[in-house]
Image (cartoon, rainbow, N blue to C red; front, side, top):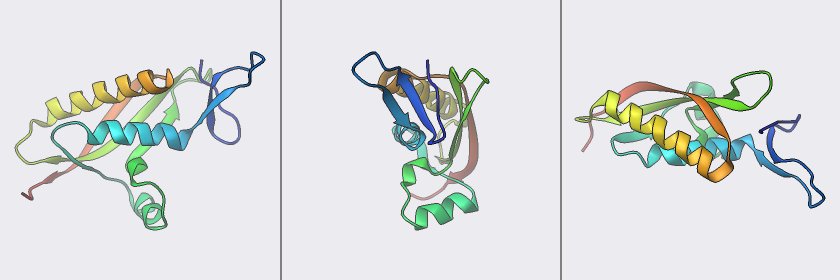
Length: 129
């Protein structure tokens, strides 16, 4: 199914005479980020200091707080770690489950990549509003 090379791209379709289809892992991270921000109750994606520095240098903020890795050595499925801040008043468990489902469906719909594990880390509560 999905494979990668040294450029960190997922190969979705092998060459069948028409060419191959590859998706960069930054694209996968952006899809995950967009899916997470669409979930009601999510305030924002959060990340470590290195991700903050990358964001200041112009990297896409949708990949902040997202780590995508391979689940096994066959590179058939991926694991996603997401770090978020939840809005005050929302049920943390419910929002986290909604994040897991939205990410899984978005990746499968847009790329065909199966996501076997989606870990949600709630790093804070947003009390503003």
